[in-house]
Image (cartoon, rainbow, N blue to C red; front, side, top):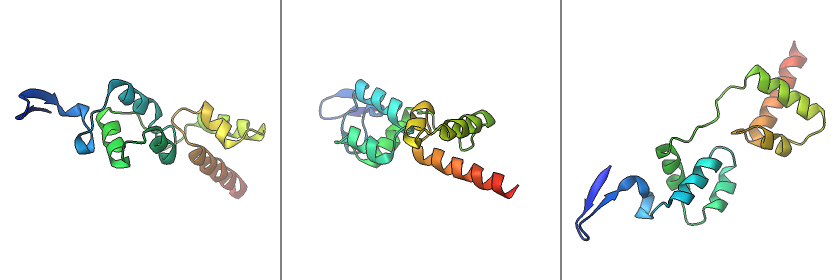
Amino acid sequence: MIQRDIDSEVIVDRFMYGIGGLLWLEPERQRLYNTYGRFSKQKILELFPNRTWPSLKTMAKNLRVPRPGTWFTEEEDHLLVSLRLEGMKFREIAEIFKYRTKHALSNRFYRLNKLHQVN
């Protein structure tokens, strides 16, 4: 959305601004695009100390940051189980899975274990 700023007679692209009107610079938008959905909320807030969580979520939505799918594929399940059985920690596995947090991987791993014990 483009808006005319009456005070300075400058046309401003509102996409460049977050909640509170603080300008989002291109490197900052790129960093958000590369980290949002891949790291925990707390880690993202640490990377952006001058931003609020609602501001980060809004900008990520505006940037159309790809979010992880809700479901794991069979290939992801197989890779997750094999890496975990090799002794890797979920933190290490999360570095391999783009857009999956260690918590999502842990939950999926234990869910798969529960499903296989029942069957």
